[in-house]
Image (cartoon, rainbow, N blue to C red; front, side, top):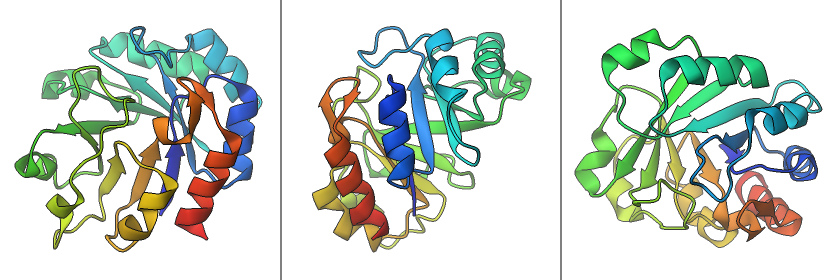
Length: 195
């Protein structure tokens, strides 16, 4: 199962996450978030990272042209879209992307079911507040194209591992404070998932 550590704001946190086995790092380009990072600061971190690590930009209600400019400039490999962008908008995007389903109920998790997608708990603030989804929603469904997010901690992962998700995305569950990662929690989280 793949792991994304989101809300990276410091190079040291990024390096620790990679050393512990993270497959992807997330950079938040939503200015209202306490984990916001400027494209310039993200580029400085990314240029010091090793190859084969996915560099994901998180965007909310952003123009596609701006997403492409930021992604190209900061050397991102994927854009994570945290709103229901129209098909026309998405078609104009040059950057590879992943859509996010902000689930309010069980029916929501079936949106975009033919695509890889990130499923997060609906919160007004657009994520990163530690709200967890009801895992019973995923019983007896094919989770192979779902990346699970929302309130995950190392202690939850034994149950989640059995469900066959493509990956998990964690932010608040591995932090000391918003935007500052706890290196011990990162290590414990990834070890609990990957052994």
